[in-house]
Image: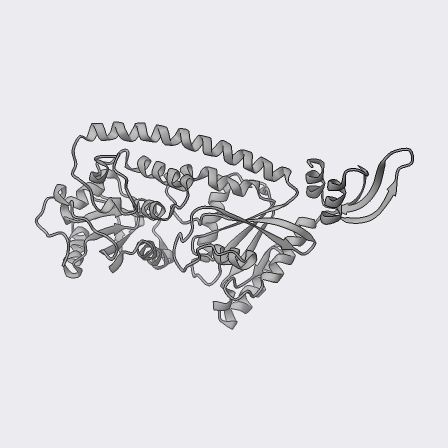
Length: 445
């Protein structure tokens, strides 16, 4: 049976709903804003995936075409009635609107439907709240959630001293002392911002230290559930959580890998992107996302078997542009596209995409792979190696004979062509072929 019953006031919706809660997912297709077109079905499936990612049982899901947005409820009266019927028929406890709701729209829909209502932003924030594993991740999520809740009269934030987990939007004490709550929210947000600023400074120092180190950095980016963590595990032998689940991992992870001609490189797995990623999360996670800007090479992992792969690519590139990685003149660092899940394509689709690779994209910048089976990963490593060692030139360097560390570094990271003692000096003239990037690292040793 449903936790809530029709006929109760919206202000009385205080029952707790946990994993396994029954929910309907509604996708508003707003025609006056251009509509979703052919992407509507894929977007609806994604919305259901977001709900399932935190254990919600989706009992009904449908698209609602909206010709004119109603300021008070988003939907028209007939559409709200359709929602109410679906709720009654499926005994749903929760309504998820896969779009953006204003505070007044959310409140009015709860009043009319007598059910908890959350929008896409609230749902993604809840997933992040449940998945954040590190202290930094939890700070980022809490700040984003408070920013989202600041302008909303949401019952579950009546007492902020109370520790709140991933499902806070589904229950709470009652709507009282709103002004005091808002003041507590503002104060807490101020403290979180100060703590995150310290995190940003610390992370910046770590980046500077890595840049001084003699190892290139490779960052994995991509749409959520594209297979980044699976590829990360495949290349590094690590055991990062990798599931067929949206936002399976949030906190960035780094491991060392070997490449042909490159003794050591650092591979970084980052948070997945998604369409309409809440602005609060982009702001809160900026310190984490900025790890991408320090990379020598970016590997954009794409789920090439997904019908919406082109739209997902556009979403990822939009966030990379927001971070300053992609500008008007193109990318500031090389970007390789790893077309993942190649093994799931039919022979016909493989032939079609192979033709695109051959004629429609820059040479050696697209590599078909299967992170699950390992197909194509050796070719990906070869391309990475070519980029990292590309532009190598023969240099004549003077190194003190007593500086064994620098001499060993040259042998490990460059192709030493010859060594000649310098007459009258306790030093060697070393002829070495290396890339400009490695030369920069060598000078910082």
